[in-house]
Amino acid sequence: MTATAGFLYPGHSAEDDFPRMEALLNEAGADVRLPLVHTDIGTDAHRVDALLEMGSVDRLTAVLGDLAPHRPGAVVWACTSASFVYGWAGAGEQVERLAERAGLPASSTSFAFARAVRAAGVRRVAVAATYPDDVAALFGDFLRASGAEVTGLRGSGVITAAEVGTWGRDEVLALAREGDDPAAEAVLLPDTALHTAAWLPDLEAAVGKPVLTANQVTAWEGLRLLGHGPVRCPAMGSLFG
Picture (cartoon, rainbow, N blue to C red):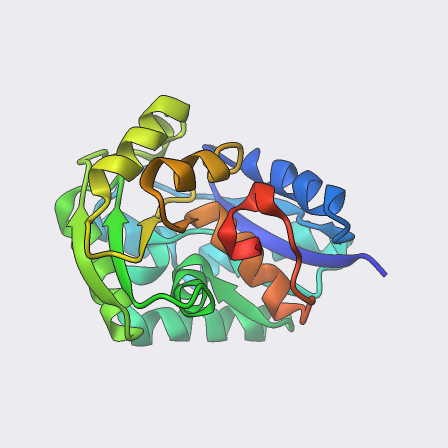
């Protein structure tokens, strides 16, 4: 039976990564569906006050009715910054309340990163973020709370998701290279507004180590919540290896 994980995606930036990942996984024999619906983001800004409003549970649950016809078995808030901005405990409360309202297992991209780091068998990570430095630092704090060691953290100062969504292959590869750290065992690209699904093997080849990206780990987390068995899909990076 087809496994369906549903996603709540903020606004419009790199949502086309999800049908691309669905196609890649199904080509690898996974038999999955990854439908998404769009939440109202309010102000498009990588700014703490805007992110706290963007991730409010009322905004997230307002579109659960749009997701219902897809009959998902789990739901994931497909946003990193508007989850980790609440801190470890606050992000946990966010997904608990989402699960209660949805009546389904729930998670967010921030927790997806924490779990994917462990699943990849690494502890020391470098963060190559699109965000301003203060927001990137909050993601570093979140990762440390999960038990990871952050050996390098680089912000890019981009304020809007709309701008991030315009980045192509060259910009994304440059971000990973510039944000890598020799001591890191993996590089993390934490922004679901960033297109990465088409270039996951290229990213890992560029830095010579696992690369975990926001949309990739979000899809992985959705399948984990469903109890879906491991999927071997090299086109989705070593996380799916």
